[in-house]
Image (cartoon, rainbow, N blue to C red; front, side, top):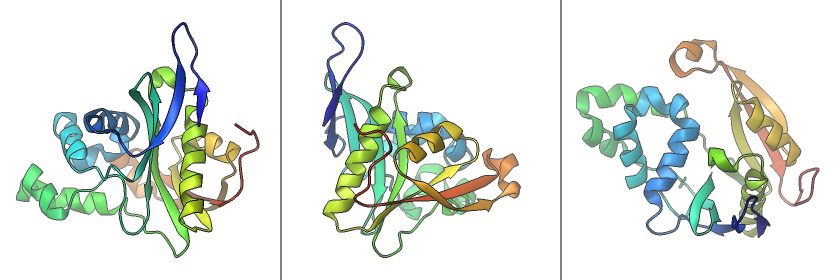
Length: 211
């Protein structure tokens, strides 16, 4: 699956499953670029967060977009108890210390989402800023949908925060519908958002615009 890049010599964007060996750091940088604001209170500073994420990736829980062999986007998913981003409680305490690590564990627990039977949870999508608006996000979503179908899931689930309307618009174009919104005004000052909307897409459907 792929699309034509724009600009001279851009080449095609291709999608593959799994983070390529040696691209873990780049994957962590892209992930932090997209979710650093939300995860910052739990994993800051960035100089510690990016190495932590890179060291604890479950690289088989991602689909990746590549341009000329370079990672330009990825989407993580959670299935069978494993998600793209890992790291046990012990790993957090080792990295941040016991005193500072305990409250970080409490914050990270706020982001935990567990699939219901028959669900595949998409737990993050990020595209290089220079590649946004070129259909890369749609390619990644459709590849996640293919993974869900192969794993006999009945639906894909994701959560989107109220401060990311661009992402929600993409999900709606790709066939997701909102099923509930949880208002969390107590988190706005700490994490920067005040509501989380859960969206579902039945497996086997496509967005309104075919690739």
